[in-house]
Image 1 (tube, rainbow, N blue to C red):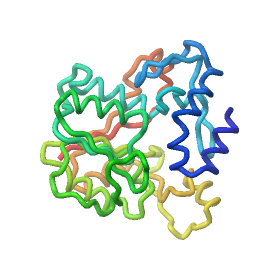
Image 2 (cartoon, rainbow, N blue to C red):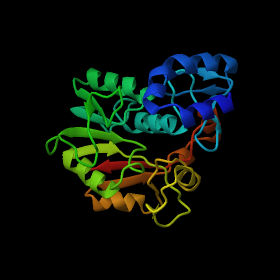
Image 3 (cartoon, rainbow, N blue to C red):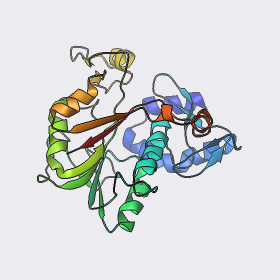
Length: 261
């Protein structure tokens, strides 16, 4: 199973994977029947989650039902803890949400939350067939103060000029709005590493983790967001959870980056 998933990630086009994953992955999940793990996004129980990864295949990663990865499960738990969707009062799902590079597992949940609140939910991507709008995040064709909520996860490490993209995301967020902008961050690294002189795809995969990653963010990631104008709150949310919940949900130890304008 691990070899099949790793091969597919490395050889099949992203848009094709998005179209077939919803049908193929649940079938794979039948080999993992059990109750040792639970996905907090969709509620599915399995003995463990499926492996997933482009270079190093991570065990216990992919929910076979909603396709949530470790970081998606962590983010969903955080949002339920802090928002009106889960009884919290700090964050409100209201107004207009713009979800950029929409994750399959979160799309339907966000859409339902916004609909229940009488709001509007829109998705955007450069070329994904799942998106309502198509544009380059470095030059967003939307007016200032467009969205009350902006979600943009694991995209900024892919774009050529991430600082320009961050400024654009800040521009389209309404004053008083909030968002989540997650990226892979190596906390052991003080500063972000970039080297556009490395052009060989195999070498970029070896160094950056994926051939299409432009940088490895360090602890200065939050500072880059602040330079764009955001107020940034960084949470080590997984560390605050009991160990048994972390095991049950198979969570990552990624930091949550909550931004406000």
